[in-house]
Amino acid sequence: MHKISLIAAMSENNVIGIDNKLVWNLPVDWENFRNVTKNSSFIMGRVSFESEHKLLSEKRNIILTKRKDYTSDENIETANSIEEALKLLKEEEEIFILGGQNIFEQTIEIADYLYLTIVHHSFKGDAFFPKINFDSWELTKSVKHEKDDKHAYSLSLNEYKKIRK
Image 1: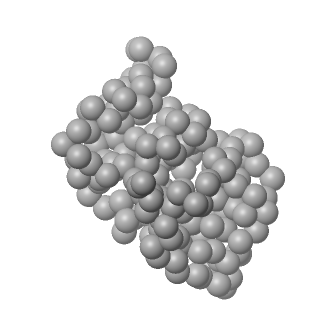
Image 2: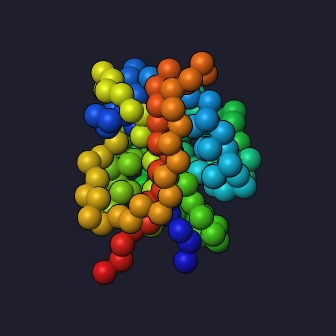
């Protein structure tokens, strides 16, 4: 059985984006993303895939869409449901869910692991990470990065493991 991991960066008020764009540019978060997801397959929603900040795996990319005839020039596969996407990746050791909001809402309960960057600021936005019941998650790692000349905001690179009862 594979591990299902959600990976996201959110503000203190749960914003993950506005107008299908990220609200910040934090190089240490991008570096962490690349290190954590290296050689792994991704699942993301169509809207996230179509954003200017789309992230593609070198391995496999599953785009969730209700459009039966959706195609792209990119190296992607499509699925019409989370269940279908997970079946396509059933041989993978770890699968990363990249969002957006709707996809995170559909997968937060089935996730085993959460890589969550907390940007220590509040932003206006129109896309949000779901509210998390932290009683169901164990913080396994947290690295704080202070504001500096390349980072307009301080942030914490957090990792959580689902507590199975």
